[in-house]
Amino acid sequence: MFGQVILNDDLPGAKQHHWSPYTDNGGTIVAVAGEDFAIIASDTRLIQGYSILSREQTKLFKLSEQTVLGVSGCWCDVLTFTRTLEARMKMYLHEHLKPMSTQAVAQLVSTMLYHKRFFPYYVSNIVAGLDQDGKGTLYSYDPVGHCEKNRYRAGGAAGAMLQPLLDNQVGLKNMKGELLPNITKEKALMVIKDSFISAAERDTSTGDGVIINIITKAGIEVMHFPLRKD
Amino acid sequence: MALFDICGINSRSNFKTTENDELDGVLTSLNTIVNPCQLALPPLGCPSNTYSKNPVDEHGREMKINYDHGTTTLGFKYQGGIVLAVDSRATGGQYIGSGSVKKIIEINDFLLGTMAGGAADCTYWERVLSKQCRLYELRNKERISVAAASKLLVNMVYNYKGMGLSMGVMIAGWDKKGPGLYYVDNDGTRTPGQVFSVGSGSLYAYGVLDSGYKHDLTDEEAYELGRRAIYHATYRDASSGGIIRVYHIKSTGWVKISEQDCTELHYQYEEAERTSK
Picture (cartoon, rainbow over the protein chains, first blue to last red):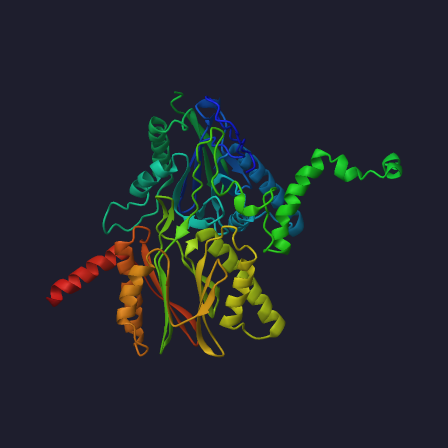
């Protein structure tokens, strides 16, 4: 098989070396969509194995005035995917003389991911933005492009750890009979900050800092706050 | 350049600049606009031995790339048309990726497709199927039959046989011949039938479905049968759960009947049993 060394003798201490196109560079993304805003946040740590490659690498990519993409996973795939996506968006802009709407971007991301069904991008994606009516929307993806519209989502390395916290605080799943009120921007920010602080405690690939993008009709506000550096 | 032409060197193949490389990457991804059946193949020999089967990181440890899988769907024909009932859980490995996946895909006003197996596979190919059905309508000035739609899907998927697609889909609709229900899967199986259940929870659903099924069910009885069968599957199968959705296909098209959380149904059935005792 490609990438394996076949040893004929059973030499003591001989090891097979593996080459793999994939590597896990960590990173967590959390996003919440409200009535007239969408917030997406990522940590800023980039790792490889047990080493830290960077403490200031954001995983958020601004696609347009209304849409931000958060991607984490294998960093090489992240870079190629975002580059190709930006090129496709530029082509759309030139062809249709208007920027892509959030819904169109969401479908494009799904198709682009599925295009690599047999050699996937090892990435975890969340698209956050405002739709045509100014309402906050959020789309989350699996590595091959299954798209789902959500109100809140945690993805990346600590995604499985943070999603239950969001279900409890934003989705109010623990409360029986509660109608889901629209979450306010302040509460959403609080929940996101708390979830990153907790993730940094328990996940080694999350930490160093958080970058938050708040998308509203007025534009995209960028906030930064520090996390544990250990 | 003149010298290259005289020497017969193809300058593009031997002296590719980086600009061309990046553009190539974008251009190949554009192929999906022209032909949605043309997916990128990895740059190796046999695609079934690719990295995506058992990916490893640089230390040789296995990396889990978990795709969302969908489970427990059912459909049956009866005197009033076709009833489709599905759950809404998607699992990526042991993690429940989502509890509210839409497993019934609306191909057009008279055709529905269900999702079981790989979620991305089902949604992508059923979307391509909607495009092909619409093109058929425009070219032939009449609606496509269920048999033809299911045939289109199975032919598209057969091209990728053995390469790891995972789809167990039911195509249901109403055409000139009346109600039509076909089971289509990633091996290229395509069978018409009266009663089908697909997914990891299908065994449990079949138990309830087969014991309650009659051709002469009334509409309400049919909806309740489908709902109960999915509910029992969600009760016993760990990979099924969430919201239970029921759809009805009549001669005038499809209609969404109900959308209930399976825990709500559980307490409803418990209450009904207690009061009836």
